[in-house]
Image (tube, rainbow, N blue to C red; front, top):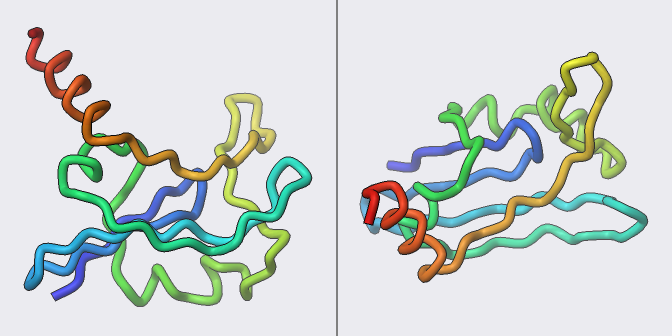
Length: 111
């Protein structure tokens, strides 16, 4: 069974295969700050996923719907809405390294 999470600020998403235990981060293609970033798939660990911020569960049919993807217009960018109602800058999701995840967990535990 596959489970999905999407980052509403960037459009990037995570797929978790519950049968094999694999986690994959899919970074969508985008044009950001005058540079083209192609689509990329990255294998991550569960602890790296738990350290990522802003991912919400989503059903597969909504994740790949043309409405969410805007008919896959490459100029479409996912960006956070600022408090004044304007669009902010959408950035690619940054994956923390295993050592950064360890530091995050130790800080949460107060160690």
